[in-house]
Image (cartoon, rainbow, N blue to C red; front, side, top):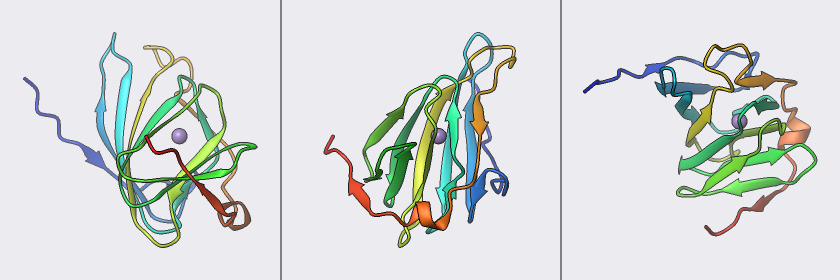
Length: 140
Ligand code: MN
């Protein structure tokens, strides 16, 4: 048995807007390529636009999450819901303006040797982009 001590640090301003604290819960060792983070967002805080080489699952634990894929609507997700974004699809996720938000993020590294990026980061999400009206997510 292993007891893993999670590592928490403030998310860097290149990748996030506002106060975001990712905790790396686990990072599998070869041949496992799984990663899981528990991420705490303050109100209005969000990721920059980015994509994942192997896609990403987001499971909402607390608060109201906002998730948008490039070209699509902002979707509001509630605790207990899980969303999946396909490999290479640019998107952002974050807290709503009026609540803290916690989600689990689960993804895989494309290769065990780290020769391909797990996440490709782009521009910050502007206030104009962030404050578009959100639609409600599915009921699953
Ligand atoms: Mn993501």
